[in-house]
Length: 212
Picture (cartoon, rainbow, N blue to C red):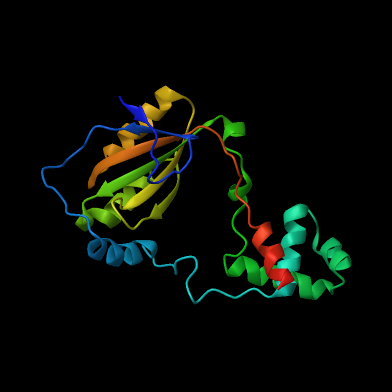
């Protein structure tokens, strides 16, 4: 197993790359931009829901941003406390929060869970190439693996980026075999996260947009 730095995708020395053995199913697939983009758009709407970021989503305004920032600072705050702090009526805050939840601007509670604190200290990212006709089937199989916490469609050489959490290196080996064993997966390039340097955040862009 060879370990080196994958500068093409993760431009930081904080990522170590592990080259997996190629897992082929008898056929080879040519990957190019013309082939990837149509399948990307199809995959992002794999289960019939509009993809996040689509034009059908509700556009937030400054009042929404103020509410979201206040909730970011204190996620357990109440509607009444929000209304008092922001100088808005309770009905306004309640309807705004409901609309934000309906539009996917507010995600599920599991987005706040910390994997390491739950016994999964390792986070890995697998740049995965798939046999294009089996793309939807691959996504369906990945959904059945509990350790797969997120999947993104990609342009370029890889087709999808699979994010997994694992208990230890033995668990990582097991999960890697599960991903490689999915019918339609050709190969994966696995990068182990050595540390979270900037946690996920959206408050800075909300604050910047408020200033405009």
